Figure 1: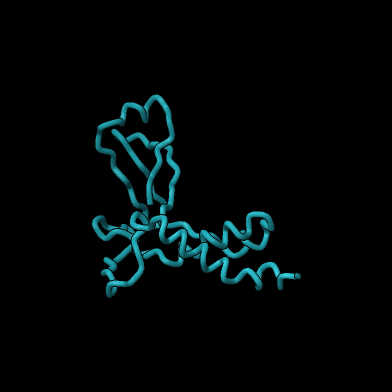
Figure 2: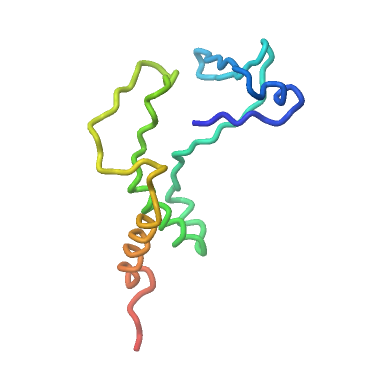
Length: 129
């Protein structure tokens, strides 16, 4: 999870400085510099495509389905190098055969494309001669 600090005069002064992240019991988080709250948004690097998006977007459905196949090859465990802040420590499970987000490459895209092409009859119906 990345915290993206919104651009403002005060947040520009925070460049190169340490900021505090306050975790509240209700799950709310606040980024602070010198006791002043900084507005931010979050970005989840491990977000996933939901099935509803594939069904709703008829034209993008195949592209979204391909992205979903690539995401199925991804290891969704977050880095354990920093505390989660959401409770007790979560130990990494046994190593998986899946790849990390940064190690996915063109070969994984190609494999997903081959899987989709092998299902072309299911998608488009039988070829008529």
